[in-house]
Amino acid sequence: MIQAAGYILYLRAGTIFRFLLLRSARHGTWGFPKGKLEPGEDLEQGARRELTEETGLTTLGGELLG
Image (cartoon, rainbow, N blue to C red; front, side, top):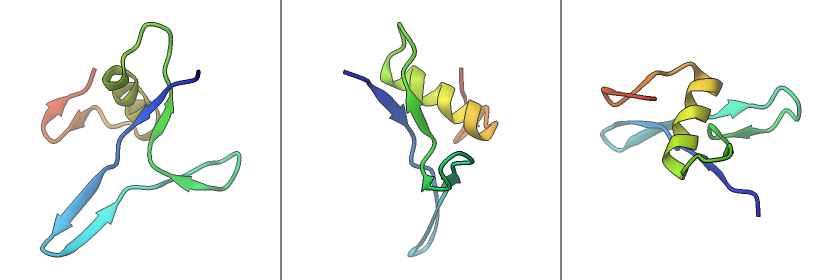
């Protein structure tokens, strides 16, 4: 079984939500930042690593990623 993890990032302004979607350079499809877990990673570690790799973000809501 292959496990993957990711985040759904959004900004909320009243009743309006804006979601972060990334476009795959390979397939041209849109999706949330996500990817396969590396050996020894748990879901949270994998989600954080993928978010940083795919977006360059190193903080999330004021919390340091890593």
